[in-house]
Length: 483
Image (cartoon, rainbow, N blue to C red; front, side, top):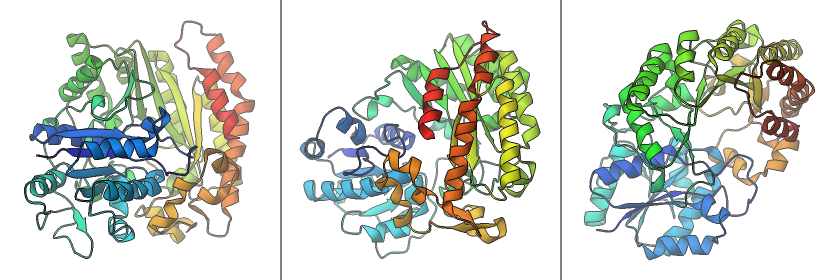
């Protein structure tokens, strides 16, 4: 039986300096490879940006796939900036392996499934809307055996046909999902000792109006967040450690499990003698008490937490339906420092209700967090995705949407990193009576403010030589470049 090829596409064939990172591994692709292999289907994976970054040409990458003669090619379109590249690569592969079935899936593909299957009907045979293990397995099993896509697969969008059910069937027991391997996409990452963990499936229970996570989890097939057990997460960590991966980060809704999950995970890892070099968690402020943060600190040689602080304005937080009020942010940072966890903060501009007073409040909070020991890692304009509350009801939030279609969001494929820093054409929305330049200007302003006040964090760690300290030189360069 012919194999299945899983492809992480390039941002675009023309853009050598994308505005967003293109070297990450799509965890969905790794999960799909693991699942298909567990069901007896041979797979191989190709990470095109890494292959090109290591000196291969596009022609060589395509030829390598062609020589292995896949029966099905599954392209991951999880992040919006891969939009153009996914379609371009689908077209190349359709010419190179004309009898192979070309399937596209992922978060961004789910948001635009109907538009995508029409937009590139000559190259894309099907779009999987939502979690893809079960629908992709049904597609592969049927097509590899008969040369046809079975009829009526839930979550599979075909050109000119209405699916029987838009949401796919999903694997309810997330602990039963097979362990994924970073070896399933080649070549290996540039930082071969780093990996991301996925710890659950489904929508974030918080309902922030500008965030896509509560929406996409439901579109992908689940009505509530389902987290893996601490034991299952420990199994995945053990598997990655065996691959030589020593630095791990968790960027999904793991933090929703709070102290209970992190304490249990730390206990299991300790009993099993599993100890990464670095363990990082993204979280809402207030997700962990001092006990939870102490458990986090015990997991690895170095631990860090990235707090989504986002705004210093109580009014903006309330209007945005943000469950975390700014007054919990500084105590969360103080607990992290006391526990021995390095704290970072992330900030957003372009939120509903944002004005000059809100920006002053945010600057005051940034300064207070720096005085407490947190390093601002990033300031970013909000990317307003389709189907979020603030996108669907923009006027109610005082916003005006500038991006609507798949083609609109595909601009992220075209723009270079340098362009994204000086041009507002990647701003997806603005105040109802404003201009996108205002949001880009606020982003620069906050970056300048942080750069001017980095001495606060430097002094904090200089006065505490025994506290784990962040890599301030790297962050200073990142913030300065963003100005």
